[in-house]
Amino acid sequence: MKQKMDDVQHAGKFQKVGIVLAIAFYILSVIMVIRNYGGMSVMFDPDTKVITIAHWQLEDGFREGINAAIAEYEKAKAAEGVKVKVRQVAVPVRGYPQWYLTQLIGGEPADVLEITGSSDILNQYFTPLSPYIGEPNPWNKGTPLQDMSWRESFADDMLSALDTAYSEFFAVCTFMHTTRVYVNLDLFEEATGKKQLPETLSEWLEDCKKMREYGIKTERPIIPIGVRGFDKGTLGQLFNNYNSQLNTDLSDTGSPYGFGVMPGELFRQINSGELDKKRLLEPVEIVTEIGQYFADGFPAIDLEQTKYLFFSGNVGFFIDGTWNAFSMINNAPFRVGVIQIPMLDQGHPLGAKAFGRITELGSGISGRFGIPKKTKHFDLALDFLRFLTSWKVNQLVMVDHCKWMSSLKEVQYEGIMKTFEPVNNTSHTAISSPFSATGSLSTRLTLQRLENSIINRPADPMQYFWDDYLSVRPQLIDEVEEASRGILRNLWSMDGTRSALSVGVAISAPQSLNAKLYQMRSNINLEGIVSRFRAADGNVTLVEEMKKLEEYGKNGN
Image (cartoon, rainbow, N blue to C red; front, side, top):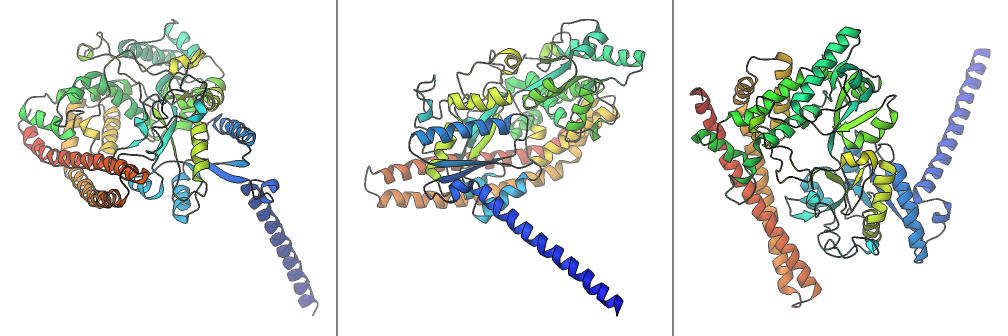
């Protein structure tokens, strides 16, 4: 009997704990709802409108910069007699894609949302901003950008924000980044005995050699070049850089559409003997040569581990984007220098073929933010997005707080940030490699091939790369053909949209606002259709020429 009474009392205690926890969770939920809605003052003030901005940028300074912009915006709107509350939501990048889709599909997303995902997601869930980018940004009044349209105020005239699949601007960009090399100046001077940082590839390789020898001499685990090996990010940066330095002239030839080069056309030139395949393979040799100064086991090292090794003083050079510059410079217990990826020079065996540095003007502009169709306050969301990309406020957020470059024109940089500025004193442009330009699979396999070349150190890296490429062509051709089927599906959809817009023009009053809007959207849609036909035509050529490469390889060319 006593045992039963004890069991009842014990169960009663657990029930009380459960009730207390339930009440606590209820109170916490109420608090979070109030907080998420903007606070008590907003909850009980129906005239206050609440909008939310959401993103995945958790780097130093970004959230603080957005908070500063929010404070300025709320104050400016209050002066206009408009009550508004802006909330900021930051989601870790690894969980952001799932959260992002859940928000969009659920129908209640943030009002201003950092964009990721495919063109079809943008077309389905986001409001096209094309009708608004030709207007001046009202928040630029009294600044060097006041006489420009919103589009013209961006460093690249908003080309980075253009969705080429639909020829629509679903977003605007907020910041700009370049790739740079961070240098442990103390280690560099100790190991090389000099202060002048390398500017050329030959100098860089020699300095790396001295660092390795210094590590052996002092019995320190010195890594000359720290890399993002796990995601192969550094391999991609190096390969793209030197491929462009060697082959930028190919960007001016080869396309029947008058601009750019299609991968299939480059392969056609190889098959016909117009182009020596070695030109496209020489960047492989350079990356393999640089790779001998990576850490042993570098494929397993991710970004955070590389940063840790750099801060520990064991890495001489670290290649990464300027998005990490603020933390790299401020958190290091030693002096940090910043240089561009060293240029291929005449002293290197392949240097005589190089064209020099490639322009970075207009590249690296990103941080795309758009407005979902389901927003309840479109006008306010558009106004805040314009405010965030205005000359003064964008510098407040990006330059002052993040130490990042602005996506806008007429911005001046000082101190270490001047080393971040894009190369703009050359007409040579970047060009993609046909080996990695046919889809995500080709990109992944190209980077894997480069990694294997560094690890295995074949006698002829270029032939090693070529033979492996030939062996995986069936999978790559399947990827291209699947992409072509997707293009056809989009063409059917876009053709239906064009028909609907034509009907809209026909039933609208001539010269009315609706008629002009329908006509503009129809023209934009037609541009997208032409772009799709161009891509489909390019894929047909690509598949044909990829199949011929086998015959070319058998001939020993």
